[in-house]
Length: 476
Image: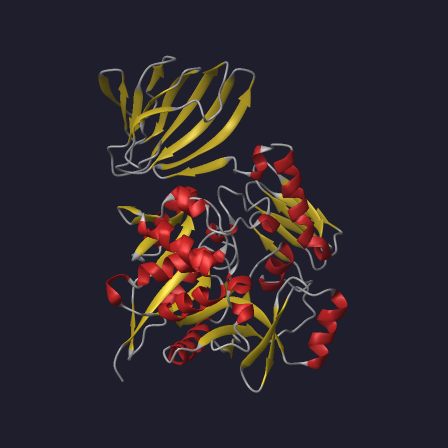
């Protein structure tokens, strides 16, 4: 059997609002470690890479993600020792149909027509070997021009998932939206309904042909944005203005729901691999390791006389007494307490935070940057204190501030500090002062992480008071 070229595609967009406060717009759930020892995104990429076997040639993965998350994507791939074929950056969110189209167009460069293995980046699988087996079977069917979806046999009347109605073996007859509780009970009793895992397999040419038949407007607009793309390092950037003009539509609405009864028939490949999309804290509790009382705990948590409760402590000790069916999620700047049966309603909290302009909707107290991270330790009238870590060999941009001065104290490692036209090296317990309006840069010339304490003072201390003159990461 000649080698069949498989092209993994990881869709890395999405905000994961129902997993707030751990998931934020600036650091959404796909980059979190919620099960196992790696992030959901890393797990998704690794599962697709593992599909390789005799007869299959598996290309390095294509990742489609948000421009704002580009360095998170690269850093997590580096940690997982996975080299991507390319990272396609969406300048704005247009849903999954344009995202998959970008990947298909990239995969077809040079005349190839691989089988796309498309998966969201925010799911978990507890039995990866079974997942790989199902994906291999789906790939063989897709090589002949079939469209194959992975479906999950429901074990409960779930209202948070879309369903596939399957008849005559594995042929998908219809897509069913997220049902109400009564309908979900009926689907479970009748059989023939499967949860739609959002994972699908088909040739790149098949996707483009189906999109051209059902939604030619999306295809034409995405082709135009891709044709005007720019590339730098591993990033591929479609034209921002043209991309924003693409109709926003999901894969299911644009193509999949229109396939039954058309020339693009869909098969369903059953998946029994401990799948969960971790769409809400209830799902995290379901897949978590439970004690004898059904409790799931992570971090420094202490539970007394609790039942079927989740406690996720991120930055301090969290003690719970006498709780049942409750979720408690703690971060450095926010605490969520919610009835386990109402975990889908966290989204309403995030929407309210956004309406009120609260920063807790966007960022954690600890903010990741391509050079490392900073943690906002304290703030008050006219001052802010940060703990900053810079990776070995990394540097911040050369910059200045109109409204604040800064005092830097090295607590670990060696700092190379440029202020105006002077450069100096600072070691542990040494410090320097950056006057308001002075051009400066911080770099780590050493082989261990650099940590400093930064004290800002001034009338305006928000992050947008940065004027960059040059930046190794291409930021404005």
